[in-house]
Amino acid sequence: MKVQDQIVFTARHGDWKVADRLLDMEDEKVAHFIASITNTVNAKIPEYLTEVMNVAGIASLTEELAGKDLTDAVVALKSPGTARKLGQLVFEDDKKLKKHLVEVAKALLVRKVLSTKVSVDYPEGPLSEVKIDFPYDEDHINFTAFHVSSEHANWRAVRRLIIDDKTPMADVARLLASINESITLKLPVYAGIDVDGIDAWFGEFKKVKKSEIPAVVEKYLEFPAEDYAPKPFAEHARVYALRKALEKIGLPLDVPAKSLEKYLEKK
Image (cartoon, rainbow, N blue to C red; front, side, top):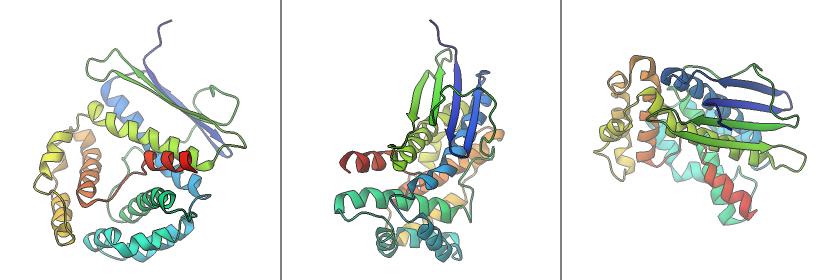
């Protein structure tokens, strides 16, 4: 049986209930819809990490850094002192497992701190309504993207988790992070964002030293987003430029699903 091209996101867990589907697979509409999904999942990830780290403590650390200007905040985020503080906020003694959780905590902190200074989310806002029937009676997270009629997309993705009393909440965070990563790869295809051009914009920077961080931040602030995406997606391109700038510095904008996966496997 032929599967209809569509993108579906449903989440049902506790008070969180959201369900929507896109059937009109025109590129611009797909881009806006999946941007809303990634805004949705990124907002929920911290709630599912409270069993493995002190999320409230990370929020307090955010307040310490929020008063700095952008450059000084990024320098502080990269500092060994901040890494040590994050190490004290994760609930793990095993050094290898702790390392995975610190990477996750670092991503939470980076996103939280920078959100007080620049745009880290897309302008669409999150999904918040139940517009379609839930596909499962059980608590669950479900993301399905099927688009094979497009010449340039050819997207088949399923990220799904049925949640019960035995499900580690960090596994829900892992799935949400995985959905974000999948969309991060596909959004530029539908939005027409020139990711190669963004890479080239920061191409002068290789392994960035502390003394070079201000130059990377300045390069980001000078980024002409309107030259790297159609007008409706200029701000999306700016988020990609931020992600690339942080990558050059060695900081994550997104919670790494792989780190959570490795932690859960070995735990």
